[in-house]
Image 1 (cartoon, rainbow, N blue to C red):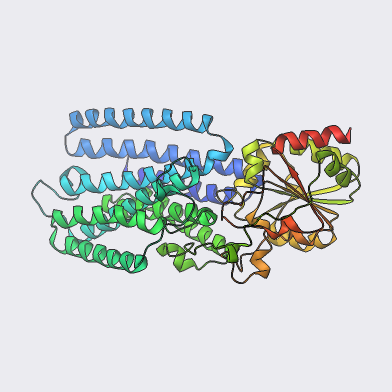
Image 2 (cartoon, rainbow, N blue to C red):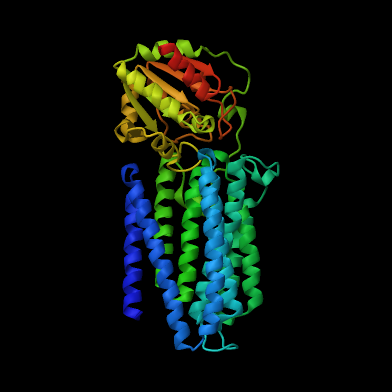
Length: 483
C-alpha cells in the first residue's frame, strides 16, 4: 500500500468522522451519524495496521511487527468485547457514567502512549536510534498530550463517582467540595505544570515529565470536586473536549494525521457543546474550562425554605381527568422518568390522549437528565415522533396557552427560582416555563430536592397537583383511568 493511498484512506476516514458529527447533531439523522462514525474508525484502524506493516518492511523488522500486531489485535479483541458487553448491559440511567468512563480511558491511553514515547522514543519513530534526544517540538507535544490526558482521566473518575451516586467518599458526592484557597491552589498547580512542561520540552528531563504527570492527575481531581451535581451535564461535555485535545496532542507527537484530525474534531465539538450548555445554564464558559464554576454553596435562603410546607396532592385518576379534558398538553420528561423506565408507558399514554383529541408535545431542556441529549435518547428509544419533541427555546412561548404541563421526574429545569430568586445558585439559568401553564401535574417519588439540592417553588403553586409514586406505575394507572 503506497503512502498516497494511506493518505487518501485517512482523508476518507476524516470525512466519515465529519459526517458522523453532522448526523449526530439531529435525532433524525443520529443513526446515520453512528454508521459514519463506525465506518470511519474501521477505515482508520485498518489503514494504521497497513501503515505499520509498511514501516516495518522498510526497517526490515517483520518479526517485531508480527509480535507487535499480536498485542494490538489482542487489545482490540479485549477492548471491543468489553465495550460491546457494557453497551448491551448499560441502562439508560447509567449512560452518563458510561460516557465519563470512556473519557477517562481516552485520557489514560494518551498518558500511556506519552510515557512509552518518552521511555522508548526510537520505537515510535521519534528518533533514529536509542539514546538520541527527542526533538523539542515532540517533547512539547508530549507534555501537552500527557498533561491534558492525565487531567481528563482523574477528572472523569470524579465525574463518574458524582454521576453514579453510589460511593460514600466525599469527593464523589453530588455537593461541591470546597476549601479555603481552592482556586489559588489550582492556579499555582496550573502554573507549576506549565513550568515543568516547558522545562521538560527544553531539557528532556524525565523527572520533570513524571512530576508534571503526577500534578496533572491531582489537578484533574481538584477542578472537578468543586462542581455541584446540577452542573454535571456541562462537565461531561467539557471532559469530552479535553479527551479530544489529549488525543490530538499525542497525534502530533506520533505524526499520525488521523489521530490529529479525530482528536481535533472531538475537542472542538466538545468545546462547542460546552459553550451551548453554558448558555443554557447561564454559566461562564471560561470558568467551565478552568473548573471554577458550580461551587456555590446552597443555603435554605438561596434554595428555598427547607421546612415542611403544604402541597396539593392528587391521585393518578385525578391527573387523568385533567389530561382527558385538556386541549393542549406539554410533557416535560426528567431523570425520574429514566430511572422508572417509564418512557414506553408514557408513549402509550400520549398516543391515547392524541386519539382523544389532545394536542401532545414534549419539551426538552438542554441539560435535562445527567448529560446533554439524555432525554432525547430516552424518547427516541421509545420511538416518540420527532415532530412532537421541541427544544426549550421553541416550546417556552407555548406554556402560557397550554392547558396542562405534565412534569415527570424533572426538577431543577422547571424551578422558577432561576427567574425570580436572584440569590439562588441557579439564578439566571434558562428553564422550561412550566409555571405559566393553566394547570400543572408533577410526578415525583417524594418531595426530595433535585440534583442541585434546591427546593422547587413550582411544587407549592395553587395550580400544581403533586402525584407521588413511581413514574411507570403512575402512568399505567393514568391509562387505566382513561379506559
